[in-house]
Image (cartoon, rainbow, N blue to C red; front, side, top):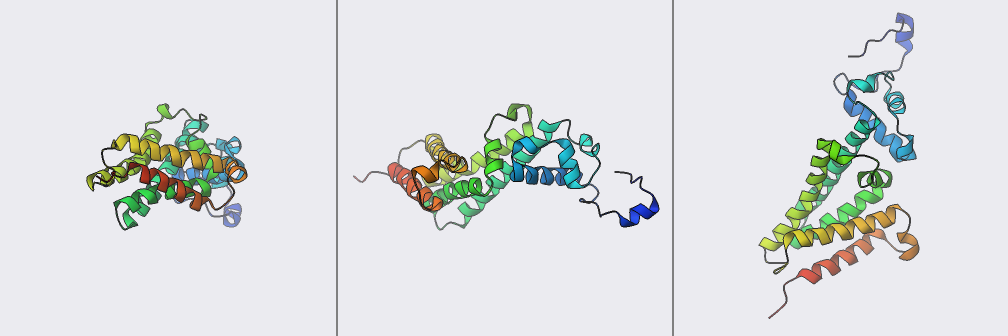
Length: 214
């Protein structure tokens, strides 16, 4: 709980808190995410996050030991949002193969929507191994893709191909395309609609693992 030391007169004119009691960690993570998306990871400090959340500069230290701890929480949120989006689109697909396609397209779309966050999610600025929750969130996102491939395997749609290898191929394709787009390199090399390009490449991958007739 944060004690407001302002005088009664000043308290009446003060802006409402940016968070509800008990939600300070979430408010700080949301504020940090907005700072990153506005100016990149270099802009993120605990002080800036506190100011953006409307709390004292000392408040973040009650929940985050340092800048990296806050950054890890932001990136964990990013991975969980990625997992949610890809899983939601997979479940809405008409069949197993369409579900696999949907996972790849949702992955690329997430990176396009949040390029600054996406770069940090897969960058070296945060020591991911030091933050178990971040590692778990990353695994959660990858699991959606593995489950999509496993569902195709169970339906006899990818022949004898190994589930883990197909998942790795799909991840590599989606991540490579998303990274090229986030870094501004894709438009110069292959101008055109990002989702259309992603769809064409995913189709090539899927066709390559379908069972061969005869």
